[in-house]
Every structure is written in C-alpha cells, then in structure tokens.
Image (tube, rainbow, N blue to C red):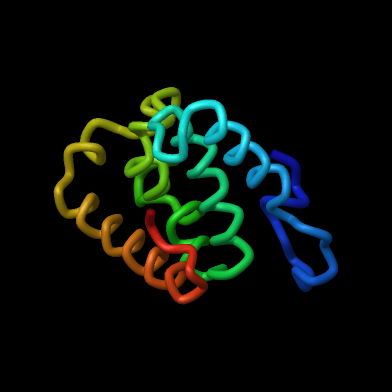
Length: 124
C-alpha cells in the first residue's frame, strides 16, 4: 500500500478517491469469485481499513496501530490473523491465548464497526 492511502492527514476531499485502488481490487475479486466469496477476504479487509482511516480515525488507530502491551501486535493483527497467516509470528503465544486481550480487541473492533456503520460501511 502506498502512503497516500494509509496515512491520510489532509482533508479527504483533496484526494480524488483515496480508496480507489482497494475498491477496484474488491470489485475485481468479487466479479471473478462472487460477491460473497471467501477468496476476497484480504481485499475486503484492506478496503475496510481504508474507509476506517478516512472516516473513523480514532477507532482505526486503536484497531490497526495501537500495539498490545508487550508485543508488536495490534488488535487487527490478532483478529485478522485468519486472513493474514503470515502475521502469526508477530503474536506472542501468551497474547494469542489471552481471553482478556481478545475481549478487549473485540470491543475495539466493535467500536470501529459501529463508527463505520454510521457511514453505512459496517461489517458485511
């Protein structure tokens, strides 16, 4: 991903469409595999991140960037590991098995989903 899509610091209206590439990737994958195909999971998660960073900055920061104490992992690293198995190495065993941390991360993703749903972009 390039910096234009991941770290939008200016007014989003100054960009033509900061999520254009991820939207195109989702559309292409969906047209090849079907709208509800599990083969498009990564593309949809990248799209969700793009929208989150534009519309729900605080919640996106909590989910994607804030590190869990004692690790390099964020809540997204843990909860999206099913789609990005290469990130499993970032998650220490004591964190991946910690029910309290998983619960806290579920609350963070719930807050993000709630914000996105206000923009009609919630979990689908």
